Image (cartoon, rainbow, N blue to C red; front, top):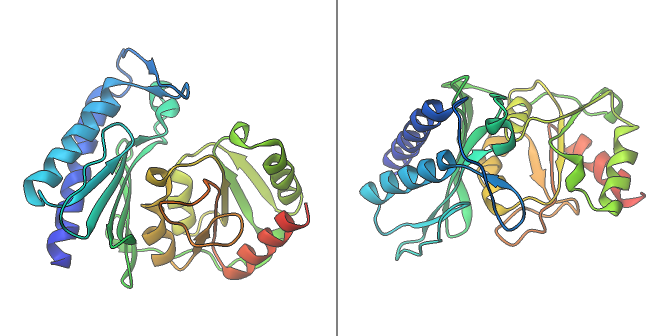
Length: 256
C-alpha cells in the first residue's frame, strides 16, 4: 500500500508541475480572494488536475485544497494540497515557489512533498523512512546555537504586532536573516542549507506537507508554543534543524 501511495503522490506533482510550467511567465488574469491573496487560472487548473489524479486512483480518500471545496471520503486517508505555494512569486516571475502535497492517515501526516516545478527540485518525506531531495537522502544541518543559525521568513508583514516583536528579538540572535522563499525555504532547511524558518498566518495546506519532510530529514517543526502541528493549529510555524535551536528560539519568543 505504501508503494502505491508514494507512486500516486509523485504522479500528482508530476501532473501539477507540467501545468504550472505551461503558465509560468505568461500573461494571466489575477483574481483577489476575500483575504486579498492573489489567485490565477494556473492555481485553480493545477489543483483540479491534482484532485483528478487522486480521485482516479483513490476515489474514497478525502481531499483538502486551497482552491477547491473539501471532499470527505469513507477511508481514513486525507490528501492536503496547495497547488502554488507562493502565488505572489509565481505571478511576478520568481521561480522559487512550489507545490505542496501531504497524505495523512487518521490525521497523522505520512507522506509530504515539496515540489519546485521550475527548477525541478523535489523533497519527499515519509514517516519513519526519512526524506529525500531529488531521490537522494537529505538531512538537516547540525547547528545547535542561534549565533550560528541562518533564519528565513517568507513575509514578515503577516505577523501581528506581538509576533513581529518576537521575530525581531529572534533575528538579533542569529547569524543571518533572509526574507522570501515560501515553501522553498523548508526544502533548504531539509537539505541543511539553512537552519531556521519562522512564519505565521499560515493554513493547514501550507504546513501539512512540510511535517514529513522536515521530520524525515531529522529536523523539528511545531507552532510557536512548541506544540505539534495539526489541522487545528494556530497558524504559527517554526521549523528548526535541531532541538537545541528549536528550544532556544522558543525561549526567545517566551521572553519577548
